[in-house]
Length: 72
Image 1 (tube, helix red, strand yellow):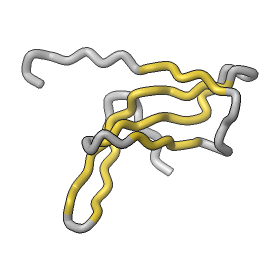
Image 2 (cartoon, one colour; image 1 turned 90 degrees about the vertical axis):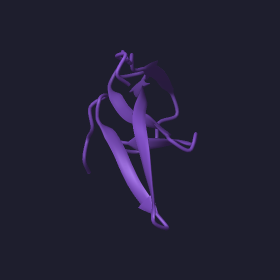
Image 3 (cartoon, helix red, strand yellow; image 1 turned 180 degrees about the vertical axis):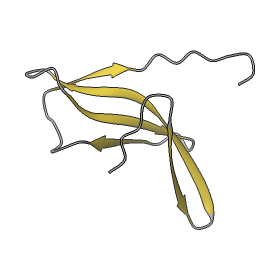
């Protein structure tokens, strides 16, 4: 499994269509304070979760702060 930092993007391809996703939230366990997953926003508007272990039930979402330049 490849772990991406907040500035990296995840890509997948279906039916000759390339899709791209950006990490938007870090998922943190309320009990341990450990990061247990990352939420991605795809260019289609869909969201998906990459869990590092088992899916959590008592989690907090911590949005990544994205600073965009004028060149974006």
